[in-house]
Length: 291
Length: 223
Image (tube, rainbow over all chains, first blue to last red; front, side, top):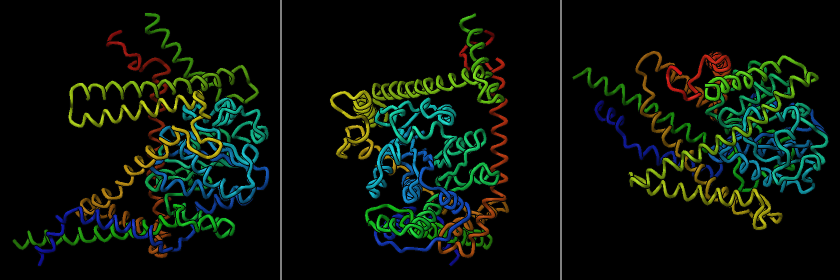
């Protein structure tokens, strides 16, 4: 008996792959709709944007690429929907070299299509991508034009009505960095620490732990961690702004809520295999002890 | 000696010192702030050259692989071909050659060649590579998480609690404990790592600015 259980340790890993594939595919095709609980780090971002009104400007920095789009895209989209629903202006930019601009352009195209009344250059602007990391960030804090002389289409910032209202990032109400890697940290330890601009970060689940240090130090006002955080934000936007529910009901739209269903099943599969692995491990030790 | 050693050291001293000094002055001190701002703009240009250096390195290493017909040389051909095509359509779009409106979409929503490459080649390929992690993490968790000793047990329990606390079916029971784990023990450890790394970066920067650390000059020993 113990020998049979111990053999589970050498189970063909393709069984694990198959279960993970099914656990991911089935909930995406047939969404379950697990309810998520709102956590304070996510709610604080939502609550702050709730205090903004027409004329206020939020900076949304796309500091991620397609690799983490499944986690980061829903966060960026939800922040955009929230801002546009409140008539808050958005200055969008990208500082991540491996596809940041693609993520930015696709997200803006996706969400602005849901708000036909928005006017480019007046309600939002796409500044495009800029290399240079911290140097670009420090420059745009004082003056966007020093880092981004024109928008993504090369139109000078001086000709864009929204950019006439705001000279530098420090004049904005909030900077949100949707990040993979280190760029989100720069927003916290450079833009917040040196210029006092409130900063929020939406990051992948794997990088969320390091941001808790900034969150606890009050260098960030909130944190959207992974799909869980994104699904919480989606829930608040859907509940607060019923008009957005139509967009979220689109079966072709990849939302964090659908992703959370898959993540829930996959977490349970992983935990089940950890338990099985440990039972098999103890069975093998017991078998050796008896021998 | 002056061009190879003293001039680079002097430039490094100025480039490192000016932004540090400017940090302690208010915006009104233009005489100090303006050179710092100029240096920051220069850094963006230098970063652009770093990208160019990366491209040169990729070309050189992959060309060698193709010449030697190393294992997987065909993938090097695909990589260089993809890079050449994407770079070409990107450059054509950026300089608006051939009626291209840029590197985004046309006004009617159609993607430009660069946007097409980004949306239909780069994005799915990158997403696929990252998605594979889910399978390998599950397999690795099954094989690595064993109750072998106290440390491994603490790691296992923390991992399982966080995994349960981060999903709807477990957050009712483990949600608060997960948040505590992330904020207090994890936050403390992360803070230590961040402060340690920052002190290390500051000390290395100081060594470079003061000319103690000179290996970046690429000079032989003793020069």
